[in-house]
Length: 387
Image (cartoon, rainbow, N blue to C red; front, top):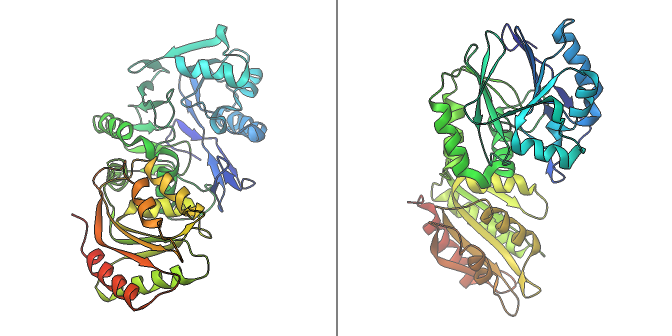
């Protein structure tokens, strides 16, 4: 696949993978992206997951058209992008490897060598001259590992963005970009919003027509939509006005309360209402929806003198990613000693800019007249957008 006249895609699609990073469901697989830049010197951008080494090397040979690569540029050391380094270096005995000092230290940890006689160590602002293409390196620490470098090619106005602007899904599957890019962002990169903001500021100074990430499709100008979404996500602003309801329910009574609340919110004119059963639905999708909406309702049971485990995991996933600036509603259920609302609120204490609805719905086993009235009050309070 041609990216430009001199840049060609040589990555692979993985449809064998069920869980990315051992936790994220990927029904449409993953793409491990790699690129060849053919100039006076020939450079390969990143490698792929080790099971695909042979296919990747064949792709490089086809793109190189009889030439031998001079460089392998390693932007990111996660094994899905680095575990074919050894296969490449064994195959191309005279090639040099280009990476940051931190990346070379990780290389030893992962693979037992950092190829000391074949290193080109780069830092922010360095340039690798291939001829017409003079690659500029931009440090992107903690987006989302500390060694990450991005690479800008001013000749073709291409930004090789490492894991930024990536998404779940193989490239031979046709699907909308934003949904799986959003789930990928909040799952993989979401904790590091400030670092993403720093990279966006660097990118704003560049003339970019194409973005080539390590996962997902090439993005082409106009890039405003993609850059705007990344700015929204990384600044922790809500993308959509609406209410996301995340719940767990043991015997169906808490679910009944949630469904009643959703109906009342709809009657109140809330434009977007999404619901997730945290015991059954994809947790990563739920995290994405919590960040997407400006309002969140948490509904769960008191369980083992705590809260239901799936709810605790969900809230911890939000707090570790810097959840902030949202309106929160709480629903608890407990037969003899309900304390779920208190625990949920305590778990959210470290989050900045949260506003809690005045009404907390407390259910004793099943809905009664009092708790139904409380749900109606909570619906009125949550119908107003977060300030």
